[in-house]
Image (cartoon, rainbow, N blue to C red; front, side, top):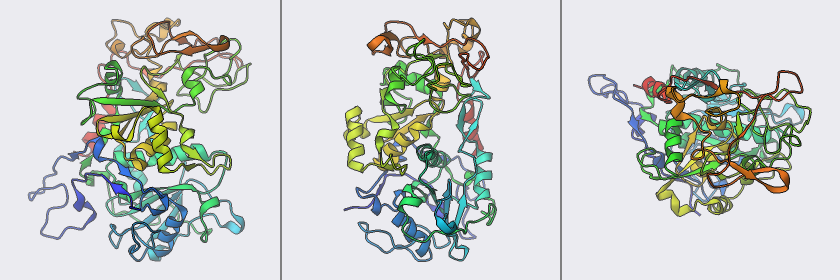
Length: 505
């Protein structure tokens, strides 16, 4: 059994090492001038897990591995690759810290809720606050509504809060308890890996616990957790990671180029001229056959996808609830239904662990992406808000080693860009520069024909018209729609991405 294969090209590998007084700091030449960060393509930002997750040292780790780290961090791991770790991962420096970030407490008796913080051994456990690794940004087209990657200053402030230096430290994201929210929390901690990777973190410094501490951690838990700001990271900034991993995130214009080229776009994702778009929502939302949607009796196949201003699944309350919905229903042209929960096991117990690697590979293959496709085809991930699909993206990029990128705007952005909505105030007009980004056209969104049992479904053709959602008022029982904030004068959609790249210059 082999250990995890890491296919990461880290052009500034020396970042993890201290430099001598006579050497220029990483990213600087001998004259002290900052050199541009090295751009890294998606194919080089992947990791392939061991077949047995218990043998992983990073990426997806089991509770026994986390326990070995927490109790043996002072000494380097000397175990064979096909055995459980017995100490600090061998590739880390002696001064590396173990930072365990729990999204909640484990809810064990006698206050045994946290992986014990042991500052003397450089082990620190924190409970995460409500920040969820994204931020409302201005893309040039969309602003003040849809959330995208958190920016550089926000990222640096967050790292300082927990004393993390990504060149040196090892960060583990973990769930404490088995709870009804465990699936959503898994989406969030998987997104943390994507976000830190985007900002240049080496995947060998990041991990997610498979399952919860409450059910899986056999060692001693404690009431002892570190307070925010316990230790300093000495002003570390992601600027010091002299690599550019922003290729992991696609702006709308690049995503649309892929859709327009029928998944054969050239020059959009470096190294690939074929793409595979996945939609991580439950299949009934993808096909618009959901029967748990609000107003399903009166408006079959509509009011299924909640808008950016609402959270959670559509309501089954036929009188309506205080939720808003996107401007029209359907899915991106060429996308495949790829429900995120299908990749997980032990769901009924709220433990939410990933299925074995071979099973994940088979699920991808059944959906149309074989392991052999990894050399020529990139996975393009999206869902409603780019949270559900974090489970899929983590599985493809960090477990299976498949090249993967994300469209952060996802459907709450995509389905806001209309040109023929019954409410004309919502439409992009032909004279608007942003008209080119409209999506309610047959080449960019799946349209509908009559479906099963009187409902409305989408089909892979260019017939029919979009299923527009139309608001009917502001009362508690009224239908509501919410459009993202759209700049009709926009000619590009990569402002936030350009800002992030400039932050490291």
